[in-house]
Image 1 (cartoon, helix red, strand yellow):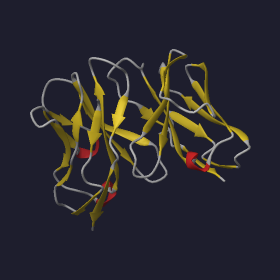
Image 2 (cartoon, one colour):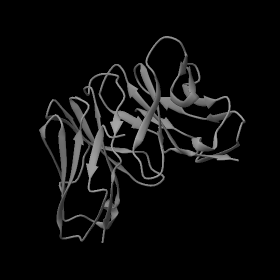
Image 3 (cartoon, chains in turn cyan, blue):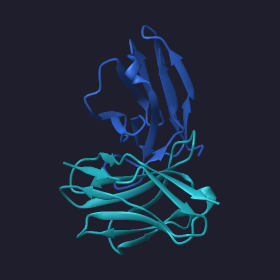
Image 4 (cartoon, one colour):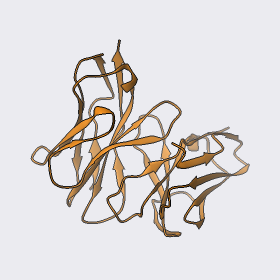
Length: 114
Length: 114
């Protein structure tokens, strides 16, 4: 079965410090992996994706994520957090070999403390 | 942000009412989706339309009825809902449902069923 796990409901980080939001996945075929961000009263916004190629993917607003096949992980990172990064972050996976569904995690609430 | 619009943004309805949610995308996409977002739960995919044809119905109760008159518009007709149907309903679109392209989300309709 396809699934995504975001083990942390809440992540707090001080402004200027590096941040990591964790995601692990389970798919039968090749994983297509995505990160989205949701600000209050807004829809989800696409940040970045991994389809194939370089394991380190760079996306919007200075975010990046590293695909680790052996650990089935796709953690979101940023070298220096901003207060404006505070939001809800969702990891999603899609089975590239079959089906057309996205499977989303439960979300991680990131708070950047000034 | 204005690529996918949803109306109304907020809706309060009784269990015997009939109402409709509307979604419109201005991105030239061919696939559209309805999701249900409840607190502390993964996004639940409800329906998928690809080139106006419904391709997914994830065991959604019949009190939810989708309609896709063209590739730009998607409706969700609601009738005899239950209080547990209260949630944020998100519409999304993508180039098509069989690709690895990311989805673009609308701001959602916050539905409250009394």
